Amino acid sequence: MDVARLRSEIPAVQRMTYLNTGWSGPSPVSVVEAVQRRLEYESYNGPTSPDVIESGGEVALEAREAVAGLINASPDEVLLTSSTTDGINTVMAGLPWNAGDEIITCSLEHASILLPCYQLRRLRGVEVNVLSFAPDEARGSILDKVAGALTERTRMVFFSHVEYSTGLRMPVEAIRRLTAGRGVWTLIDGAQGVGHVQVDVRALDCDFYAMPGQKWLLGPDGTGALYIRKSMIPLVEPVRVSGSWAKSYDRSGGVDPDTDCIDKLAVGTVGSPVKAGLVEGIRFVGSVGAEAIESRVLALASMLAERLTRIPGVEVLSPTQGPGQSGLVTFTMAGRDPEETARRLWLSRRIVIRNVSYPECLRASLDFFNTEEEVEILADAVRSLA
Ligand SMILES: Cc1ncc(COP(=O)(O)O)c(C=O)c1O
Image 1: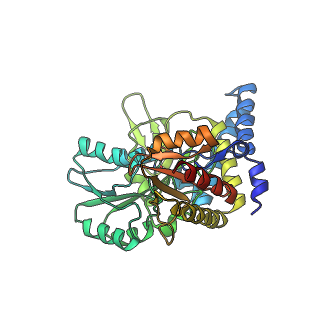
Image 2 (image 1 turned 60 degrees about the vertical axis):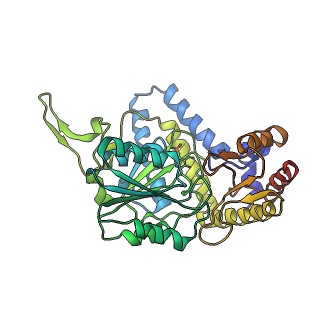
Image 3 (image 1 turned 90 degrees about the vertical axis):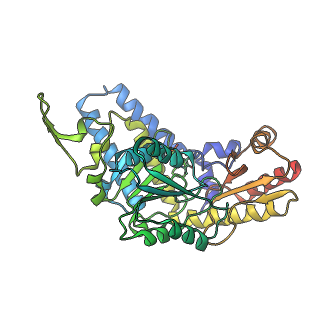
C-alpha cells in the first residue's frame, strides 16, 4: 500500500493528526470533487431537465451497486439511506413486533442501538435484554452470555459489528449460528464495520446490516445504506410512506402496495450529489482493498496499544490482540477527564481523537492512511499529559 500517495489525496491528514475516522472519515479530494461536479451539473442544467433526471437515477443505481459489491449483496437488497441510524429505524419501526417479544443487545452499544430498542419497549411492549459486557469481553464469554439469554420469546439479536465504545469486534457470525433456525432476526449495526473490517453479508448470514457512508468509506455526511436479505423485504412495512410504496393507487382509497421491492422504504427526494460522493468514497477505499485495510489498521492499533500500555496511569480498554481486535483503541488516563483531554490534545498538538461516555474513555481510530509516526505523536502527547 502506497500510504504516502494515498495521504497526498486526503487534505485533512496533511493539516492535523486525524485519528477519528470512527466518527467521520476525512474525504479524499476525489469525493469532494464528485459532490461538487454533480451539484453544479444539476443546478446549472435545470434540476428537472430530462438529462439531469435520467442521470440522477443512474447515480442512485451506481451507489446501490457499489454498496452491494462491497458487502456481497445484490443491488435489489440495498436501500440508500441518510445514515446508519436511518437504516436502523427503518428496520426497527417496520418489523411486525408482538408485545413480549425480546431483543438481545449489550451494554457497550451506541445510543442508535439502545434507544430504538427502548422506544419499541415503550410503544410496542417489546422486552430489551441488555447483556453486560466488559470492554474486552472474550469471544467465548460473549457467546455463552448470548446463548444463556436466548428464550423462546427472543425475536432479535442486535449488535454492532465493531463496538464504537471499545473497539471490541463482535463474533457476529458465531452469534448468528447460535440463533439459526429459531426465528430470530439478526440486525447488525455496521457503523464501525464496513470499510474498516471485511463485510460479507452472505457469510454473516444476517437479515439486516445498516451502515454509514461518512465514516470508514470516507464519503460525505448524509449517506448510508441498509441491506435487507431479499426474503425479509416483505416483512418490513414502510412506516414513513411515499409514492414508491405503491405499485398503483387511486383517488378513492385504493392502493396496491409493493411489498417485495426494497424501494417501498425510500422516502422523498434525496440529493444525488452526496450519492455521487459515496460512489467515489467506495471506489477510493475499494482501490486500497478491504483485506489490506484490515491488516494495516490492526497493525497500527497494536502498535498504539503497545505504546500506551507502557505509560504509567494509562489503561487500554480495547482488546489488543485476537479476533476481538479492531482499529479502534480506547484508553483511560488516571485523574484525567476524557472530554477535557481530547480538547487539550487538539489545542496543544492538533490531534483529533474523541471521548466516549460509556465506558468513560478516550478513543483513537486508526485507518489505513494513518502512519506509524502519527501513532508515536499521539503516544508522545499522552505521555506528556500523563
Ligand atoms: C455503532 C454506531 N452506531 C450508530 C452510529 C451513528 O451513525 P450515523 O451517524 O451514521 O447514524 C455510530 C456513530 O458513531 C456508531 O458508532
